[in-house]
Length: 147
Image 1 (tube, rainbow, N blue to C red):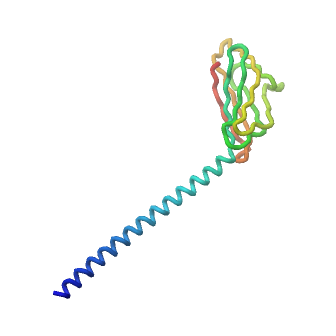
Image 2 (image 1 turned 90 degrees about the vertical axis):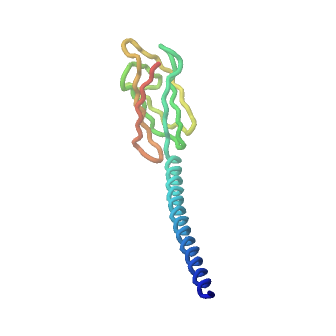
Image 3 (image 1 turned 120 degrees about the vertical axis):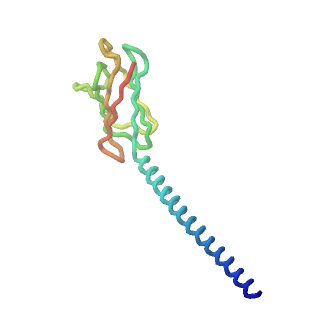
């Protein structure tokens, strides 16, 4: 009788040991997965700290308005060039090629530029903006604006 109790106790202890080992392995795998996710999130955050994100909008109406360039990113944008792709618009500060050049826009900063729209046949204006930041020297975004 005592041997049967010892055998049952041993089997139960073995069962608990196996269950605890399986649980520990699952927890270890989950911990590794969470660590990988945390490392990826940190890397993404570090990359975002190096990126500028420029946004372009028009305010006011036709024919006179303001072109607003905002930096929504976390890094400064430098060597900014704004070029008209489609439509006609005269922009103050543009050079003889119709390109607006700005040296720098800091994070959360916006720049307003006076503009004069010509909307004879075009009901929209397409512009490409190029800039450099700490992440890349070749950033580009093309937007279509409807005044």
